[in-house]
Image 1 (tube, rainbow, N blue to C red):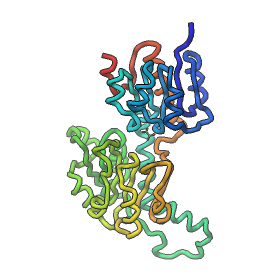
Image 2: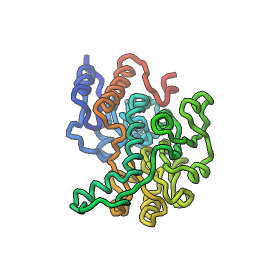
Image 3: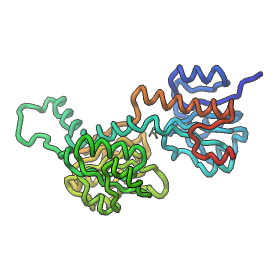
Image 4: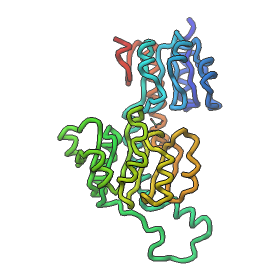
Length: 326
Ligand code: DGY
């Protein structure tokens, strides 16, 4: 009997690919060439399933061209590359990889906050450039982390992980803003206080963005919001490009409207706003918040398990639109 055909749209761990090859006829991309939408359409045709990452857009025209498609498993917790309504209408199950990356991503959020507040990369460049000739009292003096106030916008699992680290590990005051308020038990556990966005922006020493991308969260932070922040504050974005207006941020950093920023995600990535590359007071990383070997392996395995469970056993593990199976 012939095996069901699937596409693995980007390179993944060979051991996970191997598991998929045992049970599926796999069209893979271990050379990891990012496909254009036209290439993706062509390679997706005739497939019943696909394993994607954030770089593959699954939308109405693609679904129309691939009537046999049953499931697309994203190897990411975020799924702004999916048009979920169109997938649901087309009867295509969408899955993501929640939970397995929560703590690793929260670790990175904290690492970026620390590196930004304490000017780690700026001072390393100074040293590497041979500019370090003497110690001086104010050299790379940054912002305090312990005992300061962090404001978290987006208090899902990752936001809560950052809150726990901040409150319990660093004695920080934690403010948060979210679509819905946490239960009193969770607020207590995270030692977090719910506030409106304006209060958060005005009072936080460090603003951390962990909100999912949607039309509603586009430019959650723009010139207006940056103007409300303390001039000594830092801004950390580990959410998605587009949550911050990068042009407005570059200007605010240049004008020292805020002290510094730490960015793991960018509007139009892998392109980075050119002005962000010229300002010194920003720490830039290439979308690596979930990148530990263990966590990336767990994400790949969960995406593969989603494909195998659904296509071979009719079961779902981490569905985004479970109504498709009803
Ligand atoms: C996620 O899981 O959403 C990360 O940003 C990796 O894409």
